Each structure stands twice: as C-alpha cells, then as structure tokens.
Length: 137
Image (cartoon, rainbow, N blue to C red; front, top):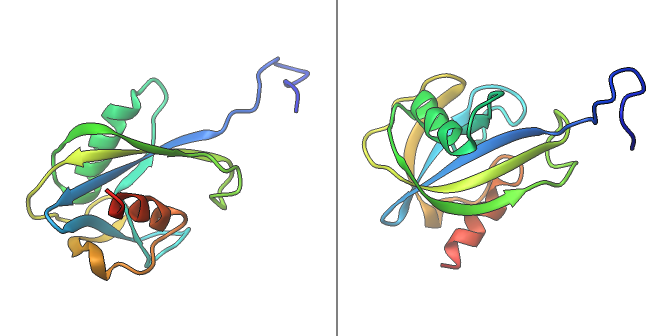
C-alpha cells in the first residue's frame, strides 16, 4: 500500500472504543440498534472523533449509549484485524471502565442493561473474545 498520488496522505483505519464495565458478576451491554450486528449484544462504544482522545471517547460513548458516567480504569486490549468489521478497517481500543447505575439506552443502542457474565454466549463482532479474556482474570 502506498500514499495517495494526489494528496500524499496514507489511507488510515478508523478508530473505535469499547467500554467494558464490570459490576460484580455482571457486565454492561447494549443491544445494537443498527447494522452491522443489529439486535446483537455488544459493549457500549463507538468511533473516536477527529481530535478526540480515545479515553475521552469511551466515556462519551458510555454516556451516549447507556446514560451512565464512568472512569477509565485501564486499557484491556486493542483489536485491529483489518477484516474484523464489515464497514472497513476499524481498530478498536477496549477499556476497563468503573461505572454503575441503571442504564438507559440512547444514541444507536436499542437497549442497555447489566447481564450476568456467565450467561453471555454470543456477542457482536469480536466482542466475545474480549469478554472471554476478562473471564480469565
């Protein structure tokens, strides 16, 4: 891959963030309201805006999708497989988030709730692999 002959810029992947909030034996999840993966469980999250710090973006997305405020505890993982998202090359940064409260779905989330971790069997995209890594701790 090379830079654009006209502008000299390199093609760039999009950057997304995922909020992984654990409260006891439960995890905060949304049901996706839009494609891709409409109707499937996922971590609250979304795209980082131009000029936005990813840690600020994950807190913003948590509030937009669940109506909950939180704080970044630590980085969990980065998912960057170029084929992980049908919308194109999307790199996702997953953060462990300290948050609690009663979620209220907003933005593009059809619903938001705390789910028992042991009962989650399927999630959107590669989110199940993130949850599986958390189960090991």
